[in-house]
Image (tube, rainbow, N blue to C red; front, side, top):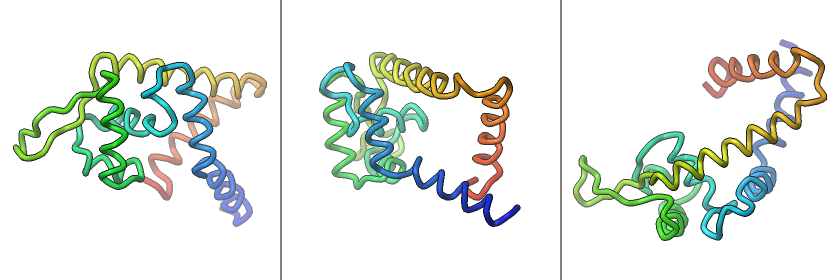
Length: 147
């Protein structure tokens, strides 16, 4: 692979991975879904949907926060009925954060909104190009440097 290609990919990833880019996207995706679901709590809900039940301590590195930040955000989601805490069968002192049915519905809506946003962004691409991009991106994430 040419160095220029690697540099172009690194620059594009830099834009995608920038905190301000993620926060702006999360804010847009959560708009109108209630006060508990916003750009701050989105990562907790999304990570639980992706990984399944976890303690706040185990979920924290997944979303890039410390345990107390994760716990605060989880408490907001719990108060809104989007997650619940259950005893951890492996450690009676700990609790797992678990999506509720209402939380699963919120995740489904968030995923629909994200899919719609991506689809709209690719609408002007030539036929087949978006499908090729999706295939290559999937391969990059499963076989590339972050696998």
